[in-house]
Length: 86
Image 1 (cartoon, rainbow, N blue to C red):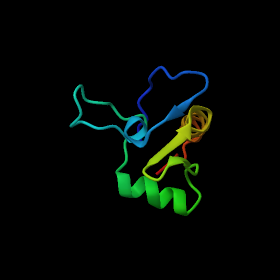
Image 2: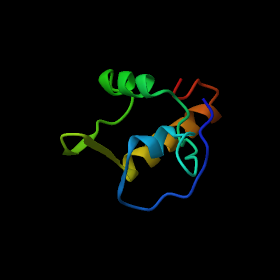
Image 3: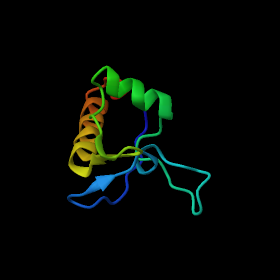
Image 4: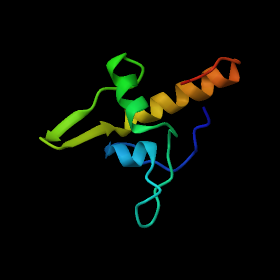
């Protein structure tokens, strides 16, 4: 999987659309990790991706630090010739 580099803050939270992107928003949000919404949730269930933090009944966020670590892990495994997050 190709992860698209972008500038992220050191700390804070990201919404799902900021992680997997949203081409329909105005302006379009490019994905950090280009996978589908259902693949993201399946990855959380199996432990591949970090669990969300619930801010409210309909609001889930992820720590920037955990997403950065996930991206770094993918880059490391890709350099080693493995499949990375796929």
